[in-house]
Image (cartoon, rainbow, N blue to C red; front, side, top):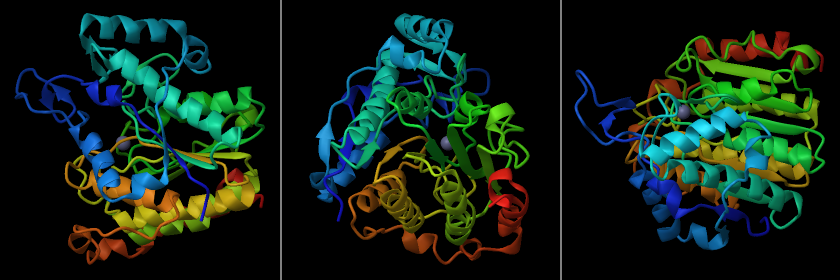
Length: 368
Ligand SMILES: [Zn+2]
């Protein structure tokens, strides 16, 4: 049983709102007003489920403070920060590409980054060994010079740089959000000190991003590792990816700190992805990474929420993640029966082919 992990969240993160639209598309020709996916009564409900279950009582709750300009400038340009602030001050508009904001968004985005940076610093200081940042807006699509796809600042990229600033030599960022984390990849593509590993749905978003052929550049060759799984991949394919590719890559890289972009939109009920993960998948992956941290980094690991758009399943998936971080067994899942019997939950040959390819050809794995 670990010591009490840290739980980072802030009410203002729930006040960020991209405005009326349908799905992720703003109101316009052919688009009726509807609550957008990224508006978060659902994430607040997720925290409510964790609290009602009693699991939140096992965490130490921390209220983060907004990230400073010095933090944001570890990854982002001043022009990008200025655009987010100015667009949010107007009360509406796109701060980048599909990155609509409201009056509260700039502060919510600074709180999301602040949570990840402060959780990382707390873990490095030994206050917690594990932490979970349940924050909005998400971060992994945000690039150094532009917001993208609901992401304003790159929460975990800034946290990884903050860890380096604090003297940490090598950082792993593992990203199991269903989309490819182009922003994290771009921030560290030529960096030998940060290994970015992404498990995502092949070709989903951004287009032409996250191929197995993207393995880093310059001094960073081998420190980008993309695992694009075909649509329909479920529990066994994800666990095989973790065991057969992620774990050996982490062992080869020998990081001092693990950061996890723990989106839950690979869940089987998510409207944005076409994957079939269940609460058991999220719990097993989280527990596996915590055990790896216990072995390799003195337990130091920080999880941060990213995407998650199923109104009814996101809370269960966040609860499963939280339960694993707290060292508890997988929680009750009233929705499990609707997913676990589906044939794609088995690891099928077309799903695991990419794992064989990576083990044979990725610079970090082929050399080990
Ligand atoms: Zn996503």
